[in-house]
Image (cartoon, rainbow, N blue to C red; front, side, top):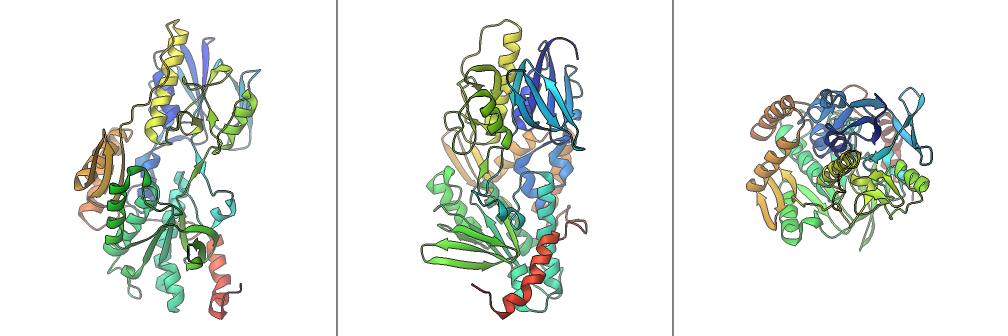
Length: 446
């Protein structure tokens, strides 16, 4: 690295990577800092969790992606602090070592974290799905639940293991519930001798009154109908108020109810990461209710044109927290910096191009909304397939993904069902179930 204009990019998600790549011909030195060594294609994490894809097919080493970009370096670490006056960021490496990197321009694209709406203790029993580690743990919990059910002799215990609760009716929750239902009804029947996987209950709960509400009434209703058709119980207007090792407590218009379930998955709500508030505090900026930094129309922090906040971390014109927003704002920030360094006129304020939304429900069934047109069923599923292949990074990833989709969607298999002994069930969950077994039999105390 020389003495050229220094750009630090925080995060290697869609936003950060797009920003770094947009600077590939600029007369700048780029330092990209990320908490992991890989770029993650988050929209397909649920397929890792349900045994369709391997983690390597949706997670690509950042160094491999940027290997031909000579003006970029990659450092591993979690950025914990920003010195606005000194123009440095402080990061912590996996071994605990702290280091500082100076910048002339800072682009913060650290993504979003799971939100439990003030109930962070739910995470122990209902993991979210934001990282590869999350997906692998969920894979162990899901497949491990069937294995544990096979060992049980108490019918009530069997049912607890075979009841899967997915919290959240957005795309992630719908896709996860649909795939667990397909596992139970298509993939696993005939592979067990004591249990029938088809007796599994898959319950999707959400406090709102519709699944996939952002798609509109017609598509939302079609999604709900298709979920119910493949065996998912959809419980709307249902707020989760308690989660423990053996179930959840929900609140409905009829009062509080208990759902006995060992395997719970949290797919409801996102929040800005801690670095978001730190940047806002350091720069004297405001944040919205979700902790996202409120930015100018050019994605810069008010009063600090050298600091860009993009993607899920920014609050601008009520833009949704989706991959396209991150890609477009990241690219915009990179091009803006390149224009500044080259002495070119400033770019026009950022304008989002909505390319549409889509979500899968089950094999050959999806919904999509693009350009004012709405699609459902097989047509939408084919659109989903093409779009996701386009955005998977790397030719080898696309080829292997197609092979695994062929096995899972045309056949009944799952190519990536292997879990380690540590993943079969989280230690805490096993302890909770074991300790609670006698309490359940004797009658749960109030």
